[in-house]
Length: 315
View 1 (cartoon, rainbow, N blue to C red):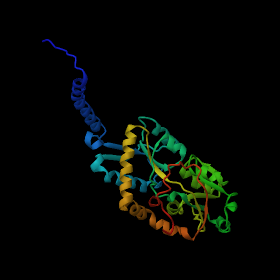
View 2 (view 1 turned 135 degrees about the horizontal axis):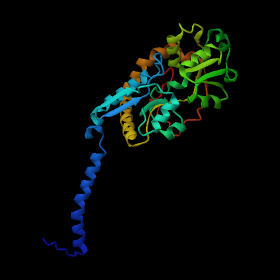
View 3 (view 1 turned 90 degrees about the vertical axis):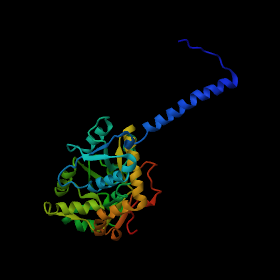
């Protein structure tokens, strides 16, 4: 069969090219749109692996995973099915970060206090999971030292004392920037023993963490006490973080969409008060002497301008 070619010029050439190219262009757009659709359209399932707890008594993240599950559930119609489960073994925070930097790492999501450095390495979902409660710090101390803390009336009196923190925690740089003395421990569970053995003077914890940890450990550490008069505050959001790749970005979009829905309809706040309300009330935050310090590690993208995202004592 012979194929004839002819030269078409002027308006006839333009019209012919439009007739040929327009359907192709529209077809390409449709293909791209299908490729960009979330898991529901492609039949894939979101498989989310988060870090295992450090020990059977480590309950720090139970609330966070419930927030995550609700955000995923709220977006099932748009993004499709999901599975969520812990990693097969415990990993220290530094190891978790390393695994997150690998394309096939053993975890693909974690929740952590943020910093500029962390946000450069990984993709943050900038909605504070605990509504910024992490920045309201009260102290676990030894019972015999309670009178010493009761007489502290300004930050200068706190500076000579030693604060206990875990190695690599975001709080360390914040505390040190304000001239506070910090002693680092290698692991979370070991910090309680370090306080008991006078390796530092107070274990700075969020308002809900301190009371929960005291309840879980005061029988095994009888000298443990919650200091009742002081409150240290600095803005410190905890975010969900995912990888900076195409899969991580899609997961981030899904979680962000679910969290925004929860903020708008009030379910985020309701879940927060369900889990944290009793502890916050017991902590008596509005009755304490509060010392505010800056957080120089925050990125400019921190949503401090959105009051609906943040907890404020007494409001």
